[in-house]
Length: 625
Image 1 (tube, rainbow, N blue to C red):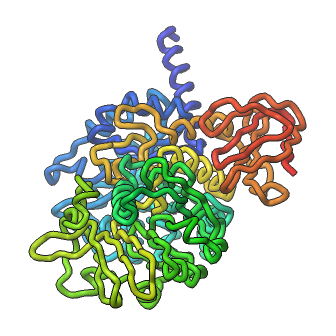
Image 2 (cartoon, rainbow, N blue to C red):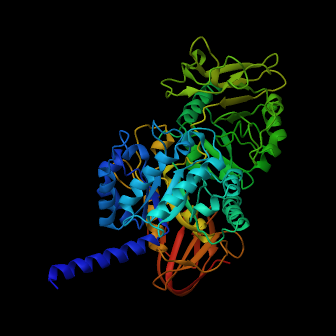
Image 3 (tube, rainbow, N blue to C red):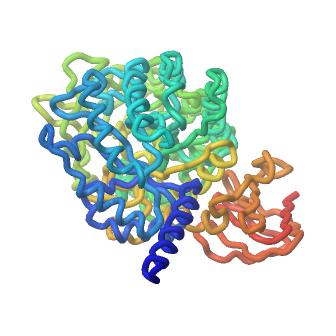
């Protein structure tokens, strides 16, 4: 046999073993590799994935991208994706998805859809083993019409049968569901979907898992899917998460910053010398996403901030704490409503931003309008008041032009009125809608001069919430991602794909442009460094050591695993504020580093924060009593 043939065989064997190793990896990202910036930067971003220990890239292999025009097939761009991915050892999870102008919606044109599936899968069957069928079919925007579990099952069945006809060893992945929609999932399983997929798939987006309560909810959602699979006799099929992540738009919170600053100048023209009370409480999970630096960023420079619990509101002295602010968002802890109302009556200034005030309670139940009426907050939108535009351009209100300039452009969707004000009360608009003779405040001050002696500052802008689902600070992206991955893998998820890899970064406000864990120029964000540190501590092939995910005293997250090299790893972090604990280390500790991969000094007493601390060693046991 010629030497070149032998070398070729050796390289082929190496490629196969490498591919198998990556196929078993639980670590993935979503990447739009088929076109646009991510396609142009593809060789480099695939190498960056590999350097972070990421074994999978999920990418659209959309119908409209390969059949254009009808009957003409183009595969050059996907050929290039596969060539570059194979060079670095990253597996591609393709999504067969969406429709074309001559076959909309796709499930009603199954012959045409089958031909698309046959063309793509046949071409790549020797290079791609796993195939996902559609994306978020429970959303109208992706399904093209009202979502229906039986209709998706029709499309899934045809796709499964076509793929298995081509190669029975190929694996069919159920299309990733937006959220964890129990009713839709069960609708598909009742329609027989269980026979037509090999892997279940969800997209359980949410805020950061910053408390044991939030972690419990996440794991309950995962368990619900496990239980439903068991009910339908599908326990042997793995469950993947092929989308979950957090965006870091650079102007996140800017409307709130500007409005709060303008309100403070308007209400305290001689300067504010006292302390602002802000909420930070385990009983109000969204508040745990707001650390001191985030709170400070929402107020004028040098403003003193004090983080207070819910139970202290009733005893807040207005003279010492003239301003009280809740985390931006529409969720309100209704158990403290009476105390908050009394605070305003006593002369305090209450700040509520990030949407409709008091719209939900902490269980996400809608709150009746009477709660807002008791605070004299009147809001309306197109679905509550006829003649109101769905979206309207905004401008700075005349009364605020001296304190609020160059407000960032965006649309107003919810507005405020004066129906509940009493004699002596007034509304001071800060930002108002100004379109087609429609005018109404989107942000304003309710200044009271009746039996209420305080003020309420409100802003209905939705996109500026620090605590909204999927949005966070750049620092917190690196905190949240490994927490979610570790908890998911520990609780029965086989693979986790972070959304997404490279950020387009073309709109400073739009969260969709900032989910990436690397910047547009591929410079790493905290999410990338955190993913890299995670795969270093817990490489592919690691197995959990116990079912527990809390420390013995229940104050810390504490997960452990055995690595393929026989070493043991630990991940320990605090659910909220930093905790100092006595630490006993048994065995041979070889490495200790933080969630960004930076070395950590080991001592008998250590501080644990929301950012994970990793320990790696031989015969290792970490005790934090």
